[in-house]
Length: 286
Image 1 (cartoon, rainbow, N blue to C red):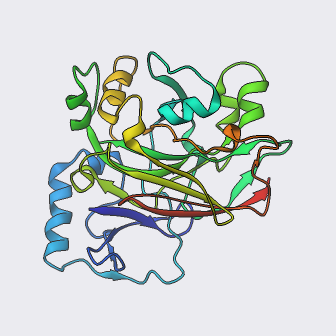
Image 2 (image 1 turned 90 degrees about the vertical axis):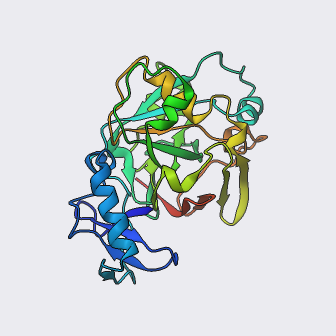
Image 3 (image 1 turned 120 degrees about the horizontal axis):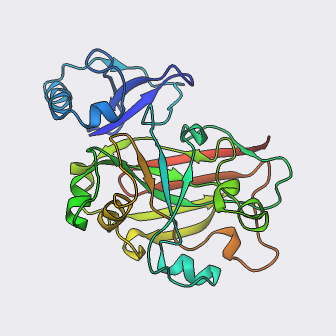
């Protein structure tokens, strides 16, 4: 299923994208929101599937309707750095022996087509298309990558916008360059794991002002989705509705020759992942 949330910020309503790929169906009569509670409730998910198959869900007029983040009440966003072989190579970094973990605050999340703000004082705002993993079952001390995959509720497109000077040149951890407001567009859909299939066979692409910048595949991940979930569960409990951003392939501005083409107000970024939908953001000054 392709689940999404539509409406003004803070007042989104749950919806379903029909199998025709264009018709929106209203879920508000069945569920209160698309969140961790829903993803962990197999009976509720089955009710949605049955209602959709039976044509019982009312149609929503999607014309002019804002698409919000597809997940409400996010608990935490765990991010994996340098998780693609080609991205590590372009930045001159060593292949990590273990996953590199940092965090984004849930309040960085915006809708897939919302405006992204270039932070005040920023000279190195960068793009990163990423596969977001949404946890569907509580995960702690998992034993295997297969068990990790079994705890995934769904997947979405994430844009891990980053300010490289804040991240690398200002001391401390990466978090200063990762947590600026609007720095985690998410969506348009949360696609349930059963519909995605193999998460290591997904193409990821990103354009800046119409020019293709990233064209990668999750097959390049150093640590696959199942292993990432297993690994993270050794250090913290993952709850339904938590999100893991799993890293970006090659093609970021930081990996390009000087002068590096960092983002400025007026730039337009578009990104997509196979089967998970497409985003478009205009960048403006904060």
